[in-house]
Length: 167
Image (cartoon, rainbow, N blue to C red):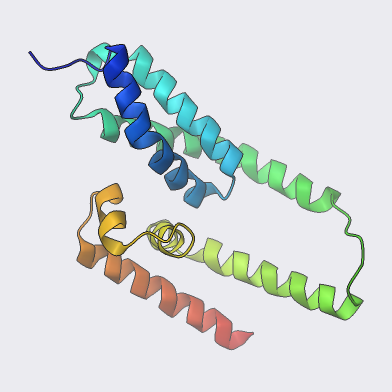
């Protein structure tokens, strides 16, 4: 008889296996680590509530689908919060005003360039560059071929180079 997701030991095993990658996956989409942790917890709560309907083999897919859907539902709210936070912060000037201005402009352009990438390219780029994941690992997490990951990364780098030439 196959083991059930409803068994505490199996659920704990699934959590240990997938929680970190799920947080990273959502973090790369949102740029908000604490929000990604919240979404991961929401996904596992939903898995627990629906455990009788989800097989162990489909649990990972279920978690990532639920997390993506929760993320998409929270995007509008997060945008409003991020805009408010950007307007509300004042910096203590320790560097020259020119340096601070150039740094802020560069950071803004970089964030816009990464945000402007199509989601599939942005996710692959951030998983590789931030989380230091190899293409093979990214391919496993996203259920894609290594060639697909290579192509997405190449396209992301081409786009970012175009932006950097304009700076």
